[in-house]
Image 1 (cartoon, rainbow, N blue to C red):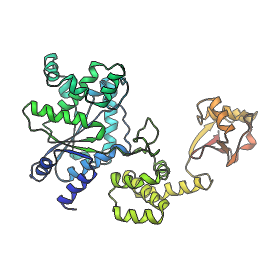
Image 2: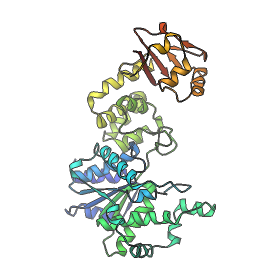
Image 3: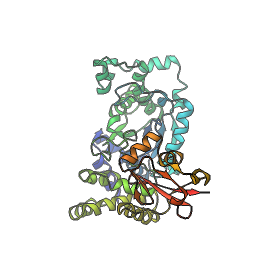
Image 4: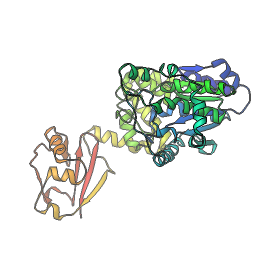
Length: 398
């Protein structure tokens, strides 16, 4: 793929570009550009939704530009209020640093870690005097800040907004000033903050950065944006078999968007597969993301496990838990065993799962909440308990 094709690929995936003409001019200038990508490490685990802008950064990295990954350890102590209906709890400096390290380890699965510059915005924000902060806030107005839908809605509905939350977009924007950023990349939920960076750079006498905004990936529910808190995500650090199973649950009507935003596969080829066999298209996607984040050697095992579970079987290589044989010599309530082995968090949850036919023992459904598990149920000192369709544990007597 030549340079023009790489630039075109990035632009095809964007939904907003500010300013496209100057961006293309910069990219064709031959100058090594500073490309900024900011992250608030309040949640350190990356999912496929996060990879959409990161994949654009990968192309820019291949084109020879300097990728600066800004860990917002200082801004995370405020918590990004973008899209939030209430004030977010802040994190300690130590928590944000620890989360930032976890974040970067996962980013390194996509970008070449040797060609990434990592910057913590506490490096410049923590050094600002109160006078510096006053000067910064003087460059923006409350009216402009209230143009943001989330702040405006909270203001109209008398929902408290902390003064510190108003500072968040200014602090994130000042990151661009401190880095002399040429380009900034982010999701559409960050558009306002990214544009603040452009304006602040202009106020500080710098050439304003160009901004590329990428779409938010829809989650496995097919409705809301992918989010760990909503449980509709595929994590880049999740085991291969979990990735495979989740990929098979992507709604058919959004699967093509997953291919477009999170893979480099030929979309014409994918369209043909989807028309002929949409189930096979899901398998192609599952194999691709496993290859990207784990390696090709993990695909066959993930496929085998998925097929086994889908056909009602018990997969190999499941989690094992050892318990003392004396616990079952006189019998143990199934609900107690479920709690003991951490299959369920409580006896009431165990009873609910049993009543709803959500628990199987050695492949057979169990719906008796008074069931006693005795030593004769164990085969070769082991039994397998299944919760729902996907969770298995082998209980071994010692």
